[in-house]
Image (tube, rainbow, N blue to C red; front, side, top):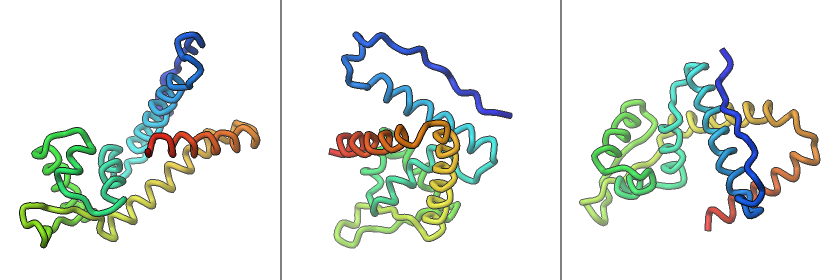
Length: 154
């Protein structure tokens, strides 16, 4: 069964102020929906929310509080989510030796493998969808996405 992807009507340019923010939000939504549908259809061992959590943890060890702030959830909710990831063998916890009140989390080798496999799958899926674009437009998109990533990372 093909994923259901919502189509968006173009917005008048006057409301966009030529910034592309409306289009960017629409694209983020569509990419998220595409990946979510693919994970459900393919019966993958990971959910999109778990992947997002692993992605943050994969940038480097972090405290449970940092992770909860990053995900915009409370500490009890984050603790339950991390517990599930620990049971799957993708994440491990340990007590910070410099501050024993802090619990840190990091990816296990299995977690890194799941992340790499999932990312490869997502990239192939997006490559297939974007293959309808010509090479010049895809090159321009890659350049623009790099600029967007850099602007949002600051």
